[in-house]
Image (cartoon, rainbow, N blue to C red; front, side, top):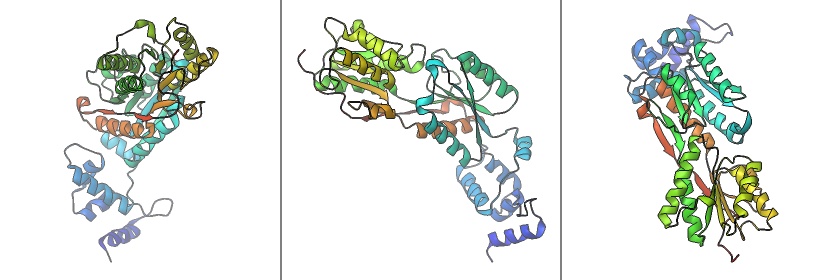
Length: 361
């Protein structure tokens, strides 16, 4: 009989859960590994003084034996309820719906791997988001928060930082003191878009940005300007519009750009939905997307794939982003310094049919 079988037999002799199945205790895991109960406990709870190899060995043994900690006892012992929090603004232009399903799935899967849970709440506006964060933290419903869609000046960051509540941002912010984050380099995508269009022969390249108060808009504008500088094109403020995150916004700003005496031959949109509104503006001006007007965007939503013509866009792996954020937040809650929890990823260009060489006006 193996050592694991010996322990399982001892469990069967010593007691059962109410369900009738034997309950594996932390002592059983410690005996199996020849470690102290304290070492096993600290390894399972992710303490920084336990080597990563030891933590993995303990986690593997616990899974093999079927050990599952009692949540209430663990909360009393560690002061943690092992729950990650996220409050989504589902109202107005701040809606997270385009990437929500994959994003939450990624967070949940990574949290489950560490025996953590995810608590998701929704609110209709920014003020309600902050109120919900205050309530969840005050009631100790979660141990820390993931903050999607960060602003340059973000009240959520100010509150959590001032109350010493762990958080990780999906994005960056204007004041990054005591902040950890995972973000996609949207500014690099915009720079690459300018380079691509310039390489196709375009010299009047317009830009339609997102909402000015979000940090991603500031960064993507920086990327667009960096791209112009890199290829040697002058900055023309007449070719730059902003505050477009819906089809209606894209239509409005597209009409403004395409109504100019010398219109742009290509337009980059910071948001896919705005690009799809731009499609409508081009149609109204009797311009064929991909021939008379090249369009590139960012997000990689499925609606762009099925547009006519399909939209060339930078795509983000939101499931992987969710996994990375969950991992970083758990580390932050366990005591890692926020300055050590800053990661950047890159968007992937999906080449479709909405961009090409310019034609003569």
